[in-house]
Structure formats: C-alpha cells, structure tokens
Amino acid sequence: MINVVKTMLIVSCWWLLPAGLQAQTRLLTIRDAYQLARRNYPMIRQQGLIEKTRDYSVSNAAKGYFPQLTVQGQATYQSAVTEFKLPVSVPGVEFPSISKDQYKVYGEVNQTIYDGGNVRTQIRSHEANAQVETQKLEVELYKLNDRVNQLFFGVLMLEEQLRQNELLKKDINLGIKKIQALIDNGTAFKSNANTLKAELLKADQRTIDLNASRKAYLEMLGLLTGQPLGDSAVLEKPAESASRGEINRPELKLYDAQNRSLDVQSQLLDVRNRPKLNFFFQGGYGRPALNILNNGFDSYYLTGMRLNWSLSGLYTIKKDRELIRNNRDAIQLQKETFLFNTNLAAKQQNAELGRFRQLLTTDEEIIALRESIKTTAAAQLENGVINTNDFLREVNAEDQARQNKILHGIQLLMSQYSLDNTLGTNIE
Image 1: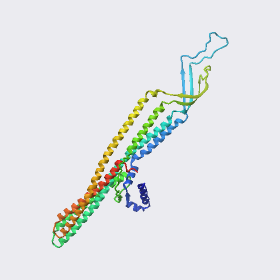
Image 2: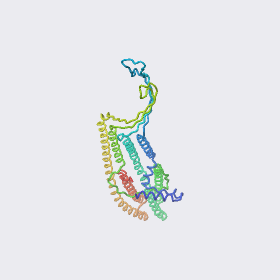
Image 3: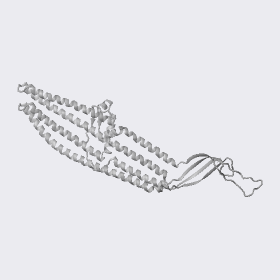
Image 4: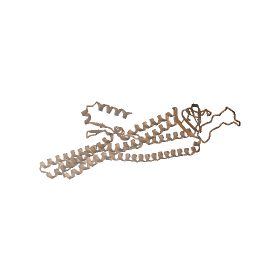
C-alpha cells in the first residue's frame, strides 16, 4: 500500500513539473519499472482477448435458457399406407385412401424447464477456463521482473563505477600536482608527470566506456518499460529488503485455477447423466396432418412436455472420473516440483546474500587500510621518497578495493530482489 501511494505521489509531482524540467529529470524506481514493463509488454493485450472470449462464451451458454426454435420439412414416398377395408361391401359408403407421397413442414419451439444444471455448469466451465488462461498469462508476465532486475541494477552498477572513476581521477590529479611541484623545483623528471597523465587519460577512456554502457542499458530498459530514458534519467537505488520465506508466485495460483477447472469438469459429468425436461410447441402444415383420414393438406399443432434422459454416459463415467483424477495428480506433481525447485533456488540465493554481506564487511576494512596507505604514499611522493609508479600502485589498489565494494553492494541488492522475485514477495 505504501508503494502504491509513493508511486501516485511521484506521478502527481511529475505532471506538475514544467515540461522542460520533466525532460531533464526522469525518476524511476524499480517497482515503477516492474509495472511499466508489464503494461508495455505486447502480451498484456492478451488479457483483453481472454476477457472477451469468456464474455462471449458465457453469453452463448446463458442463451440455453432461451426458447429454442427449429424448422424442419420432409417429403416422403412409402411403399404402403393404411387402408380401411370391411369384410362386406356397403353400398354408397366409400372409405378414404391415403396417398403414398406425403409432405410435411413444421416449426417447433422448445423451452427448457429443467436441464439438470447444464447451462449453469457450462457458464462455470467457461469462467474457470478463463481464469486458467489469465493465470498462464500472469506467469509469463511475471518473468519480466527478472529482465528488469538485470537492466536496472546494471545501470546502478555502472553509475557507481562512474562515481568511483571520478574519485580515481581526483587522486591522479592530486599526484600530478605534487609531482609537478617537484619538477618545478628540479627534483623530479617530467616523465614522472607523464606517467600520471597517461593514467589520467586511461581513466578518461574508462569514463567513456562506462557512459556508453550506461546509455545502452538505459535504452534497453526504456524499450522494456516503454519510457524514453535518456542520459538524464535517474534510477532510484532501492533499499535493502527483508524477504519472507513464503512462496507467493503466480504459478501457485495457476495450479489452483487448474484444479478448480477440473472440479467443474467433474460437475459436467454429473450434469450429462441427469434427465432433461422441456416444454414444446409444434405447429406445421402437410399431407396428411394429424387426421390421417383426411388425405388433403391441412395445418396442425402439438404441445406438451418432453422428458429426455440419456443413460449412455453411465458407460464411461467411471473412466472419465479416472481421467480427471489423473489430471489432478499431474497438476499436484507439477506443483510439488515447482515448490522443490523454488525452495532450492531460494536457499542458494540466501547463501549468496550471506556471502555478499560478509564480503561487504571486509571491504570496509580493506578500503580503510588502502586509503591510509594511499595517503602515506601521496606524502612520500611529495617528499620524493617513492616514484610515480609506486604511488599509482597504491592508488589503483584503493580504487580496486572500492570497485569491489561497489560490485558486492550491487550484487547484494540484486540478490535480494532476485530472491523476492523467486519467492514472489515483490507481488503487490
């Protein structure tokens, strides 16, 4: 809830800023990046298709309660017809004869009175299938979080390295000033300053490389989130999180939705074997009509109740239930396998978190020692006790120590958010 309010405040403040200032600064949090990537991903449009399919299917199924109209016609010729004969002939009495060619066209309206719950269960089936498809889509969309993590923390890593590179250049410039003072006093050679200047140029080249990599990562993150992230984009470094041990992945909801769909399929088996009761009205025109003694064309109608009870489904219902039970067992097996692999990955990521925390503790100690050694080396360089190569060695050693801390710090954050992604605790 706090993250949602925070996002709303950021967006509100963003729209209140002048257009020029908006273009200069683009603040992006990792939670915002998750949501933007989800909304921008083309597959998200499948959600609308799933909902339309569900609505159309449910609407069609609900029409099973409407009166059903059928129109039929037939023309037949039969080899024999009913004849009326008496054992003796009666003068003046002639019995009608029925034609062997007969014609009929009629329409019939059926209104369901009791369908055994067929329409209601069909509606549930369509809704359950839509939930399964929705959760499958959620599983695919959730995979975007890992891609966002790779790019987001990649940018943060490059930005930290750029800042450290600027500190390195300051140390080198300090050495250049000190050695230049010795050159001016005639106690050092110009080549000593050139050595430091060459290192400064190498640091400038590293700045170019890091900026180019940062720009490439921002462009990829911008494509993923659908936001134009230029060089002025600002990514907010996320705070460390305390992951819970509970698994809340969308895959679990998918397994639940699949089980609910199987429940509905089981209900359909019961519905299929229940009797159906309809009211019907049939009206037609033909020869003969209902009065077979009248060989002429005439209209007619029939109305009443019709009971239909098909028992053929009883032959296969036992095996059908076994199939549903097998499918349910398969879903349970998939769930157990998923939980096993997820717990295994979470344990490995927790071990990585512990390793990075220990490394960061020693990184602080190493940096303190290297900074002290570098400070001493700078004083020694100024007094001509050591040469520029010795000074550069200590400067680079401190820089490497700081680079290691940067690497371990970002790796710690990335491992934490990867663990959140593995467990599903980053789902809001």
